[in-house]
Image (cartoon, rainbow, N blue to C red; front, side, top):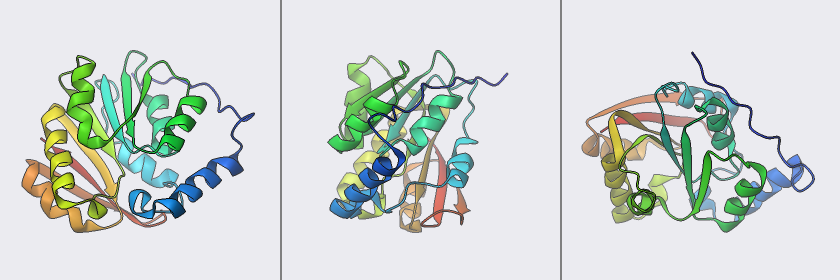
Length: 202
């Protein structure tokens, strides 16, 4: 059985499609190293990544750097009615946007860094999660920050769960293989920019 739930419609009175993409593009121009691309992920990339999730089993999911919620929206549409999605976003503009346009009770938006994932979960009395998803550009992060996030991510995922991420550069792959027990690699050309995606198991 596939669980589906239609999330409430976008509140177009506040955010038109034009303003949505203007928000994303404007933040890219201000913080290009944090976003990596001036255009949100394509539907092809979203579907390729999300089809790797066992939606019947997933109870708790975490997303790093949701931006304007391109993945967030589709995750909510596929999630179980009793599942939880926690998103961590450092950009206050994106935090406010997601809170306004995705008023789903299963979603919790945290203004914070992926480096804080263990603390964020501990504060919510959550020990482990089923999946962590990310599109933050790891290649632009300082080496120690990147390593800390990857190690913390491995620690919070249940056996049988996975860390799913996409990157515009394959440079993070060697470190993923050092930290995770198994890493599979795919490529989605129909995206701007073409993206490498990975499924990492603890």
